[in-house]
Image (cartoon, rainbow, N blue to C red; front, side):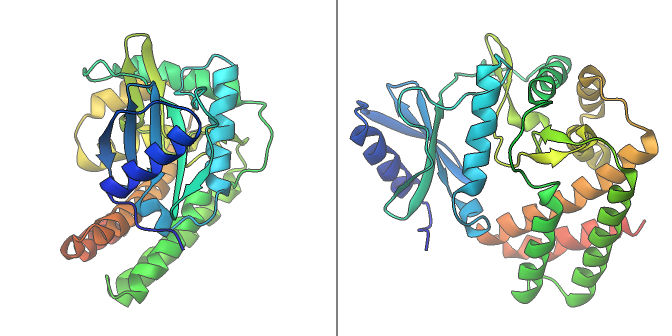
Length: 295
């Protein structure tokens, strides 16, 4: 059973594995803690990603192997993406109940990423991945969200009427997406602008842990869904989408946005509950249900 990754235990695991492979780590620094704990193993150019809340959902190592494989393929192609570490075997590694991978640490500029440049970088990543083979799930996000929804209902985090309504919406949306029969390829899978890093050499796409097979329309929906729902940063999202060159019928894009919004709302509710903010869970899920019921 994986251990819960706290910042201190994540640092301990990352440092132990890194030192076992000959790295001199003297100043580890936690950069982020949520789905994963990110640790910069200073002074080395290595970032450790220790599975946190996400390990409560995704068991085993296969999803991490997929992520590393896709990121390595992008690096080999010279695509604009953060690469697995070359300083030590990138993993996945197991230590003291934790699962972790190692990545190239890339300092950011600290400035908001240019959305058009980010969209163009995603276009280049799609091109590099167009003919990549391998076994990946086809839009596995929706199946995963459905399972999370069942867990939230079983835990009493939302009422059964809301759970049933969302479950029906997921099934309906998945069925409609299957009828579109768009060409599939390897995708980022979670391609919002928060997952692209602004660097001195331009934007680099990061966090490929949701990589999957599907139409590029899914990544298009990831770029614009949050902006369309919130009404914020709409121009930035649209600029990013235009720069990808993805041609998608507005009606089809709306369907993908619906699916992405459902998936994102269920995941966000699950994460908030795991981080002790259970009071927000029902409200977030109810809001998603109303939005997709046209309320």
